[in-house]
Image (cartoon, rainbow, N blue to C red; front, side, top):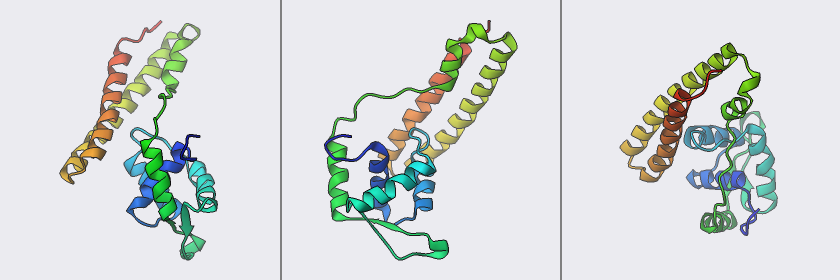
Length: 171
């Protein structure tokens, strides 16, 4: 954890709460909609971080709603912490690609296993590329150049993955 005292998942939640109070489910939906093309968060991470952020005084709980859902709102301390987090060095990327990991052991696959692996990866990246291109278009239409730029990273990633898959050895 860096100087701000929050990890990237907690910081992402603080960033999302700048849009207004949200329940854990709403935060998860916002994270899926805005961040998923380049940053993954699980439901368990979201629900694990929210009580910690509340304990630190970075968010406050609102009145329970339907089905006991609780909205969280960003506090002044949360805004300051998020600003400190933004100013920190982001550190190095962590690369975890399940296809590359399997390819590293390609000599232990059959040719048909590799062919199926590459086909499913190609299908996934093709669909993801189309979806994120649409998100970029919408972000630009809404005038959100920063969101569009972050999404362009995901466009480049999926393009690179598709290009890489074309050169993958088949056995």
